[in-house]
Amino acid sequence: MKNLNYKGYVASIEFDQEDQIYVGHIVGINDIVGFHGKSMQELEIAFKESVDNYLAACYKLGQKPEKTYSGNINLQVPIEIHAAVAVAAQANGISINQWATQILEGAVHQYFED
Image 1: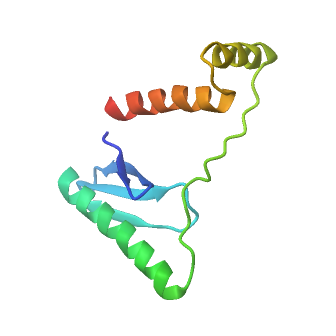
Image 2: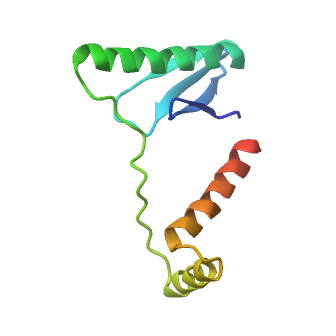
């Protein structure tokens, strides 16, 4: 199923067989923001409206909107993998963070293209 992304927020989407509608909600935040539509086009419009409404409500309430992620990932990997990553990064003349970012960016791009 298509992934929706808007203003840094990502939606999880399911199809409700009983009601014959697409139902979605924003993932990665504690606040509950949901939306639905009869078609993917309707769902995408509802998603964007929900994000905009969420941001507007936070502003009106004087609350900082939750961001889905901080940009920090703490991974524990086997020593052999850590060593191989360090060698790969060094061979490319970049840091482990830069190397991992490039690899993850490629994987995410491939995921969202499929």
